[in-house]
Image 1 (spheres, helix red, strand yellow):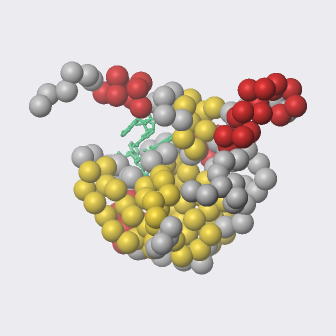
Image 2: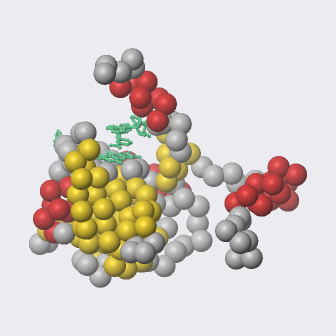
Length: 186
Ligand SMILES: Cc1cc2nc3c(=O)[nH]c(=O)nc-3n(C[C@H](O)[C@H](O)[C@H](O)COP(=O)(O)OP(=O)(O)OC[C@H]3O[C@@H](n4cnc5c(N)ncnc54)[C@H](O)[C@@H]3O)c2cc1C
Ligand SMILES: NC(=O)c1ccc[n+]([C@@H]2O[C@H](COP(=O)([O-])OP(=O)(O)OC[C@H]3O[C@@H](n4cnc5c(N)ncnc54)[C@H](O)[C@@H]3O)[C@@H](O)[C@H]2O)c1
């Protein structure tokens, strides 16, 4: 069936789904690779699985596939420049940000909010992307900072208004954001 919309409309509509931004990294010998990736999600708790979707044009992906492992770096609000560099074809990405190796050897970027270290569990074909399932083998500590967000093709910030100044809508929002609690029965 032919679709009644073009790529621009697809991007406009899907751009309304606000996400965080990650940089998925790996290493092949001495050569680190990585790319900015919004298509990332938690998938399963038992066993612990995540997924990310690299475009088939990605030059990092074949390296990650060969290495068989990767690290998902969750970017902090102050890391727009990191996202831009890792989201740009041909950039000298690792010249701009210090990193240390994870337990699998994949780069953990300085300043990341947290990170998820994985082995490649499965790869599925999906249009002009792959869906890559990762088995989580190690998890980073987390920093008490705000996340970098991507919304309608631009970087966005979370609300910086202190909870006390938000009135009843703030209270309702806080209740929703802290639900469920351990005492909830679901
Ligand atoms: C916020 C954000 C979210 C994103 N989310 C995703 C996502 O979920 N999935 C995804 O696949 N991508 C995503 N991207 C895009 C992705 O980060 C970029 O395409 C990135 O450059 C891919 O890196 P790479 O290392 O895989 O490939 P690169 O080596 O950066 O190559 C990417 C493309 O550029 C071309 N290229 C490389 N070097 C040159 C050169 N010197 N001259 C000309 N062309 C060159 C390559 O042939 C290839 O087509 C996102 C980007 C941003 C900013
Ligand atoms: N999943 C992806 O591959 C993906 C996601 C976001 C951005 N990007 C790329 O990063 C660059 C910067 O993006 P922008 O500022 O122009 O934002 P944009 O306006 O192109 O992105 C808006 C939304 O469209 C979707 N999208 C964009 N490109 C896509 C792709 N190739 N495959 C699947 N979904 C896609 C995403 O949901 C994104 O949030 C562009 O080259 C874009 O293609 C790729």
